Structure formats: C-alpha cells, structure tokens
Image 1 (cartoon, one colour):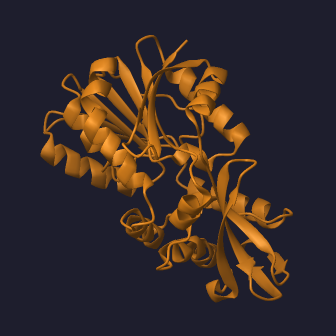
Image 2: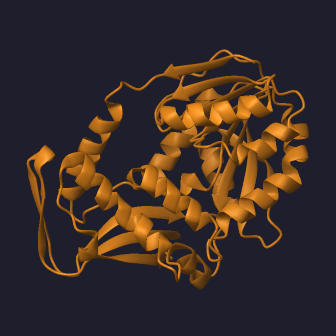
Length: 320
C-alpha cells in the first residue's frame, strides 16, 4: 500500500480552546452569534448529509454536476501532480477529481478532524493503492505549511464553504491561499451564485425541518462540551436573505425570555423573547465578485464553469 502520513499542526486541545473562545466571544457580543463550524459534531455531520439529499438543497448536486462534467478540463488545465483539499471531511466529492487527474502523485487533505482524515484515507487507499496521502490536521483559515510534494499543485476549496466567511475573513483566507501557490499551481474554488430569493431561502429552511435541526445542533454541542443548559425547544430556526450583503443568514430566535448558564465559562447569558442569534452566513457570488476577490488576493480567474442551471460555479485561478 502507498504511503500514508498524518501530520498534526494543531495542539491536541486546540478544538476545546477554540470552542471556549468562540462561545465566550459570540455570546457576550450584541447581537449574539456562534460560528457555523460548531454545527459539525457526529450528529451535525449526519444532519448535513441529510440536507445535501433534500430537494430544496441544490448546491451539492450542482457542484457534483460540474465536477463530473468538467473534471477532465480541470485536469488538462492544471496538470496537477498534487491535490490539496481544504476542509476535506470525507473527501467524497474529491473522488471525481482524483479519477480525472492522470498525473496525480499525492493527495493532501486538510481538516481539523483527525478521525475524518484517517477514515477518508483508508477508503481512498483501498481504492487507489498507488496514491500518496499526506493528511494535515490543521485549521485551513490559518497559515498552512504544505508537505513537500510534487508540483504542479491544485488547491481545492469546494462546497461553497468560502461563503461562510465574512468579507474580511475571505480576503485573509484568499491571501493565505495565494501565499501557498508557486508558478504553475492553481486554486479550484466552489461558490454558490446569486439567484432568486425564494430558491435561496428554501435551501436553508426546508419543509421537513432538517436544516432547523442542524441549526439547533450547535446548542447541543455547547451543552455537551461546556455544560450549558440551552434547550433547543426554546429557539426557532430562522433563515433570511440579506440582499444588500448578498448572503443568507441563519439565526436562532428565542421563543421567550430566558437565561442560559454555561458553567465551564462561568458565564450566564440572557435572551429576550424574539432576540436572534446569528449562527451562519452563506454569501452568494457572481462571476464579477469572484474575479474581484481573487484579484484582490493576487490571483487571476482563468476558468469559470457552472452547472447547466447556472446555480453554482467552480472557478480556476492562478497566481498573478
């Protein structure tokens, strides 16, 4: 079997420390907020997989359509020998790229979850025994040092996850990606596109309530990890379109006046009836805005592909 290496660049307690910092910061601000990365414990990941299969939730299907149709073009345009995937998770979508890259030598998945990386690597190596996998337990929003693998390298950031970053965070992230690239390397970026408000809202507020359960799962994470006494039944799921910022916001709205205790932080938080706490933004883009944000980070949009319905885009960018 080909080599598998796992490198940890995060301290063992980094996740716990980050959760504490995010909860303390977010719940002492006005308006209150919690970052969307804390949706994804085991239960949250299961719920998100359910979401991707919903009729209302188009992004996963649309991106898969592009990957299946355009993977040979992506391979021809990049000649990649190393594929780096940021926020790789189960590496499920990446298989379409792996199949289409004839010169591929190494795959570098990057994720905060060591168990997810190991599980994905086991599956990939069983299917592709010649592949070299060098997994990184790391936070892709921070500066990364990539392993010494053959170029050219293709850095993939899929799923529209870049939309979960606020504008300043996106600028910092794209600048950090640009710093990884050397001549010949490229960035493959997935972005959800601006479309009719009703389509967008339905994608984040499905009729069966799966997204609502996913949204409320962040409360269960805080309860379990920090000893809090949130009751998800005290909150309603809210999804709305902000046309000025061009993003969907998911929020949790308090159904009544309530007080929440978080013993691990020695924190007591009060909510007024109707008060809303932001749990996610999901920005939507146009080709013009993607080109502009890439240019601001020192990259040039080289290729632009969408699904047939024009709902989602994959763009290929190179360093200027």
